[in-house]
Structures are given as structure tokens and as C-alpha cells.
Length: 264
Image 1 (cartoon, rainbow, N blue to C red):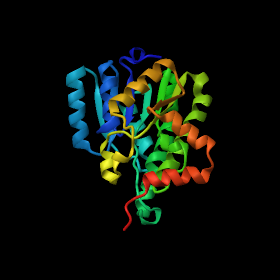
Image 2 (image 1 turned 45 degrees about the horizontal axis):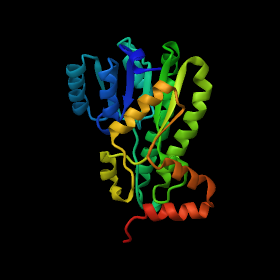
Image 3 (image 1 turned 60 degrees about the vertical axis):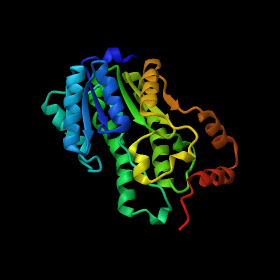
């Protein structure tokens, strides 16, 4: 399964206005894949769409949608159906995070994060199943994180959403594999994006930080090899062993040291 097989097909990318989503859009468009760009900012998306069309000669469709809305997935599918577009690649990249003491994180923000990271991804997979099944071989790439491997104090709700994505995506791959729908669980470590700046997390605490280009490249290679899980980190094996073999109280203590916010 290589990107060349998807030329002139459509890919739907969430969180497409910057960072990893933008990098995916550029990589797919460069291979002749038409892209549906989903994010909240209409003006930025329209600018991106014009740029991708000019540079790569593909169709780029901007859809300004708030994925925390319960009807978001259905509204996207209705809009694409009105244009007689069915997608063959679904990239669930949109996500948010919060860093700090749990009780200090606004409840409304936590609810929106869970809606975006978990419910929107689940709903999009469910809503676009028929598109994907009717255009097999097709692909779903769900952006997870190495934070899924263990609980993360001070980012526990975020790491819990990523654990959901990991388990959901692996099980979905098993269910859909015989229908020609490949589901990839993409698990990078920390990535250089504006999200870290937004939540205020000091990335200098992380030894290895990936660029968005590295993550997209690994995902596309994994697509070609039909790998169920694509891990992007130089020291992922250490993290996996640590989380699996050591007592949970030790794991929690060491992870908490890394993510402890400054004391008031």
C-alpha cells in the first residue's frame, strides 16, 4: 500500500491548519492526492487550500468545522456528499492537551479535549466507514502518542485519551482488515508544534523531540509496509520496557518528575 495507489483519491485530514496536519496535507498533495482540510479557522484553511492547489495541482477543499460539536462528523460527510466526494484516506490528527494540576484545569476545557481527542475521532471513523469500505484498499491513520503507554501525572486526562485511541485503533484494525481498510496507530513522542507552546510545557525536559516531517515520513513508510503501529522515537523501546516491567509506583514517580509543573 503506497501513496501512489491513492493518486486522485481524496484524503480527509483533521487539525489540518498547522503542525502535523499541515505536514500530512503537503505530503499527500505532493503525491497527487486530493485533500479535504478540516480545522476551525476558515481564513487560514482557505489560504492553505489555494497554496496546495497552486503548488501541487490537486483539489484542496477547506472545511471550517468545530470538531467538538456532536454533529461535526455528520455535517462533514453531508458536505462532501453534496460535492459527490468520497474519501479513501482518513487522518484523525486533531487533538488538544492540558498540562498542570488536574483540579486547576477548567472543567469545560477538559470536556472539550475529551470530545476532540476521543469522541470526534470515534465518530469520524464510524461515519466514514462506508466511504472507506467502498474504496478499498483504503486507510485510516489515528494519531496517538507514546503518552498512551503509561499514566502521566499532570497530563492524566490527555494520556488517558491517547490510551483510548491506541486500544480503539488496534481493535478497529482487526475488525476492518478483511474489508480492505488499513488502520494505523501512529505513536510519536513529543513533536515540535505550537501545541506545546500553547499549554506551556517546557519541551527542553524531553530528550528526543520529533519534527512533523519525521513523523509524517514514518507514517507514510508504515503505510507502505502496512504496519499496525508506527512508533516515532529514538528511545521508544526504553519507554515501553520501563512501562511494562517496572512497578507502577516507580513508573508514576519517575513520570511525575518529568511532568511536574512549577510549584506556586
